[in-house]
Image 1: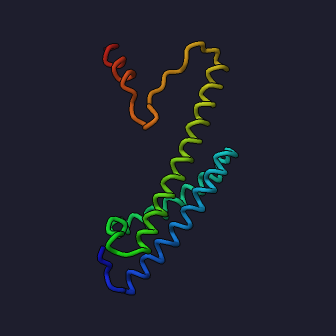
Image 2: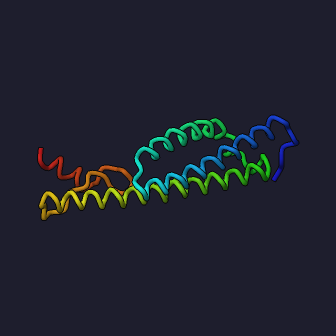
Image 3: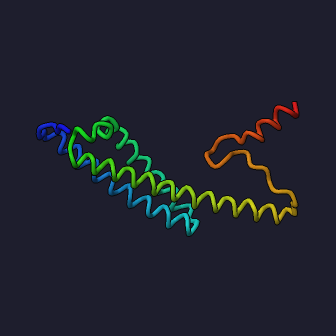
Length: 138
């Protein structure tokens, strides 16, 4: 593993990235709490802040890809980014469970005995059986 020699601009870049990652982790934790409380106003505010941070982090994508060559600070930043990704997926799972509950409640309130068909699978893709039925009905 070869590390690049000390360069002040790299140090400034990693410090900015580390600050953004710490803020992103804080926002994702707040988002999880807002999801649990179903606080839509808070979720909207957090989403805007998260988007700003993600745009800034996107400018450092190449540095993340070269983390191993850039040094220990970049390797740690890449690990922190992975943790943020995992927090995001945790929030996504909670949101999906809440949507399933709302869907079930609406189904009961409407008196439907058949389960509501789902258009998308867990990955957000159109379900294969749904797509096949659409073609069969044409």
